[in-house]
Amino acid sequence: MLYINSIRDNLISASPFLVSLPFTITDTSKFDVNEEQALWQPPGYVFGIVWPTLYVLLFMMNKQIFSSGVITEAFKNKVRFDTIFESILQGSWLYIFSYNPSVKGRTQNQKFWSVGILASILGFGLYRISGFIRYFKSFSASLPILKYYIPYFTWITLANILGIQLYLGITK
Image (cartoon, rainbow, N blue to C red; front, side):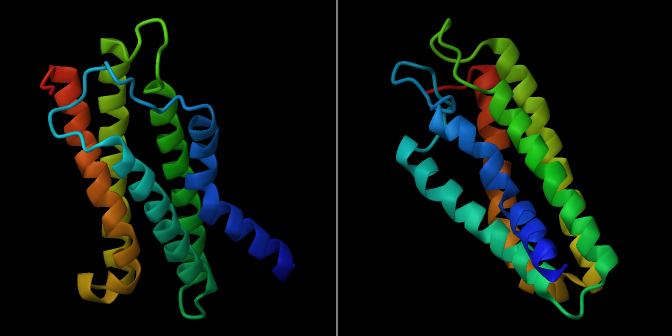
């Protein structure tokens, strides 16, 4: 049973990466050279550095939680559910914001819905951070876990800004 639980926890911990994999392999998350980009959008290569790093950090956060002998099973189950739910939100964003070859980019409708999903991910991130703080009784006590999550949350905050810039036409 321990082996099955370990496989389950590894799959859940890897779910943000696993959800993004089809979009990465098919290159549907790309930006066309001529496509309008948000004013603050970093160069494309930055995404190739940041996202794998964030996936590793999220994996490490979950592994630390799941392997802890002092964290309750109820809280571990909450983290499992939250990780899967957050992965579904990320996958939804990737699907909605996929490159649209018919317009050589993204439609205004895609930009609109992507802002909504990004805002949902941001709100869910606040919910997760507050849950960690409540469980560990303080921000400082939750830092051994949050140090893995805060970089992801910061990047999602930037993604929200970029999404709003794109939707409003604030572009380079």
